[in-house]
Amino acid sequence: RHRHWSGLHIVRSSTCAALTSRPVTVPSCDQTLSLETLSQTAMATSADATPSKDSRRVSGPPQRGKGASLLISETDYTPEDGVTAHVLFDGCNGLTYSDFIILPGYIDFDSASVDLTSPLTKNITLSTPLVSSPMDTVTEHEMAIAMALNGGIGIIHNNCNPDVQAAEVRRVKRYETGFIKDPFVLSPTNTVRDVIETKKTRGFGGIPITADGKIGGRLVGMVTSRDIDFLPEDRWNAPLSEVMTPESQLITGRAGTTLREAHQVMQESKKGKLPIVNDNFELVALISRSDLKKTRDFPHAARDANKQLLVGAAMGTREPDKERCRLLVEAGVDVVVLDSSQGNSIYQIEMIRWIKANFPNLDVIAGNVVTAAQAKNLIDAGADALRIGMGSGSICITQEVMAVGRPQATAVYKVCEYARRFGVPCIADGGVQNVGHIIKALALGASTVMMGSLLAGTNESPGTYFFQDGVRLKKFRGMGSLDAMNANTSSKARYFSEKDTVKVAQGVSGTVVDRGSILAFVPYLVAGMHHGCQDIGARSLVQLRSMMYSGEMRFERRSPAAQIEGGVHGLHTYEKRYY
Image 1: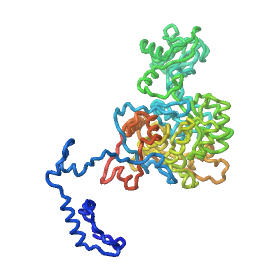
Image 2 (image 1 turned 90 degrees about the horizontal axis):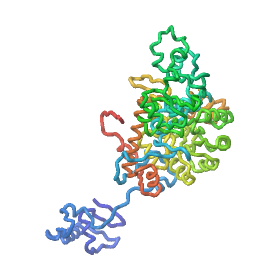
Image 3 (image 1 turned 180 degrees about the horizontal axis):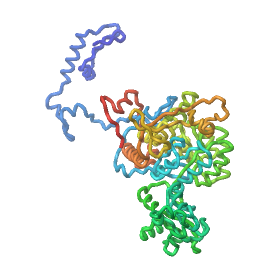
Image 4 (image 1 turned 120 degrees about the vertical axis):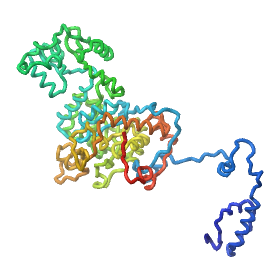
């Protein structure tokens, strides 16, 4: 076992370490030290350096065994592990979420105590930092409702007519409302058949009856399922005045009653609906018993000042989108997302300024961006939040087709690090394949995480399930796919392709596996975030970001072999169940 270096032969031996304890004469480089001479010298030195039996004993505390004495250093030194985020992302190497790992911290708290509260925009805060993507195979009213009930928010897609999108927003705002400000109302001259049809189309049967059939009219009665369920069909044409519960038997609440007080009245009266009237007994609002149950089952639901569920909606940056924006505001939308694959454009900057001039109280999420230069222009225009990601989604091929974009982890870190100086929250959009990626995005500075493929296979996503090779699936497509572009012009405008004679797809269509209900899947994601923050040593997302920027949080690059090691490996077969 020889290594030749500049004419000097060196023998690798366990005894070589002993050579440092006594001077050894080394011949000059033009001489050759024989193996026999070196071995004899090393053996002699080793023999001299061997301690006696008594000298091996360690005096004074702590008492260690002989094996420990050979391992433990007498110096108080703790080596520094990993690198800071600044060092990790310094340079021109783009990283994805799988390219690095976060090193564990110190745990002195329970995972359930982790606070996931985080800002969506400058003015909207969520108790769960999760957002559903504005895609036509991901978010319509059912998804938006489920996300808001779990503390997140859904963004209604705009690949449809403006009236349809506004109606979707309205359905979310009316779903769990506390005080329903514009309840569906009928008059005494309407028939039982009208109530039955309303129940079929709108999903509810408890309807207030006013003298003129309008909100603000004098309340004269209520019709519920108990009033009409057992009526024979030959009486379906009877006027409601004959079957309704009259005003003299109604339990009502007065205008100015708080939601808590109204719920207390409903519990004591055991009524399903509570009309709210003013001093003239005119109907001003309605409260449903089911709202009380939802408040109990979903205590962290995302609500506005009127206790309505929060909901967002996507829109484009063209002239017709101004009318879409007006309809969305009328429907009660809380935030709009300017939906563009490349947000750094004059079209988006001018749209931000127009919205701020005409609807100053409406929050605007701008994007998408992946660089600080892109972010600067949108922040200067007045954006309330930024959406980060370009070509990183599972169904997106922008980087492949257009040769532009950025690996998602690098994009999130770079943009968030810049935007935080101006107090602008950022949404990490794309590249999220599991709960670990969500934690990494939040640890790199994102305030919230937007998901598409993770939610596309749930019960609440648009579309129907079908079976293929025994697997239950749902269709999922990118908004830059040819299917989506052919469905509506909004998808074409997102990729600046509405005038193209030849369409260039920037997305694909595919299928995703059934994930069950959002009401079970999101709590799993929340639990994963709790435990991830606990392992890192962060009690909240605020502390998580602070640890990253201060350098307390440490990172390491992962080799391809390390990535394989970090997943399931070495098994012939296995079943991967998350919850």
